[in-house]
Amino acid sequence: MKILLIISAGLVVALLLYFLMIMPRILYKPDTSPFMEWLYAHRGLHDNAAKVPENSMAAFRKAVEGGFGIELDVQMSRDGVPVVFHDFTLERMCGAGGKVCDYSYEELRRFTLLGSGEGIPKFADVLKMVDGRVPLIVELKIERTDMSVCRAVDRLCSRYKGLYCIESFNPLAVFWYRRHRKNIVRGQLSDAFIKEGEYVGTMSFLLQNLMFNWVGRPDFIAYNCRYPKMLSARLCRRLYRSKAAAWTIRSREQLAEARKDFDIFIFDSFVPKGKAG
Image (cartoon, rainbow, N blue to C red):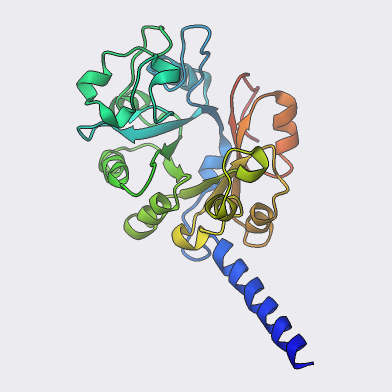
């Protein structure tokens, strides 16, 4: 009997700990409703086969002209310039070796995106072009523990008059905003890493199940739209009333299905009709 009581108490403690670990921000939350009025073009309204590559100025202009919000990726050049580029390496988009962080911005300017003539944009130039006309979801690309991109993005966005929020797969980036910019809407990106076979191990399990939410206390969870039933993500939305962003939706049918489980929608490979609502 005593052993059963100890086991039961241990299970209760573990369950409480789990709920505390996945808890998003509960108190003093900024207003997320303006972000829910838009659909977001993933890396801009791009077409990699039609000389309008992802994360290019051309793709961002098309998104603005189409009346869509923009999701984009920001990381740092070697000399500390925030640039808009998704992959950590240049191979897929530029056919070059090395990582973005291996090159200065002037060196990065020599590369073109998929042979299109479009180059790697500075984040500052994207902000200037968008000029607050559509909202931005800014993904912070951080491989390990260097938070310099957070500081650089914040310096630029502190002077920006448009609507924006940040998100990252790295909980330390979300924590940086929790600590330094409590008024900015922040999101924790995640995926079913183990189901996807992309990553394995304890860290992937914890990230997949949002068990680093206690670090950043995000305002929204951005999750792979193919896994709307993942328990931790559902609890964040239904129990804690956190907003949920779906990535990446690739058809009108998938968008219609995602509306059951998500509040914010990031699309790719098709052009939706109308606004988010």
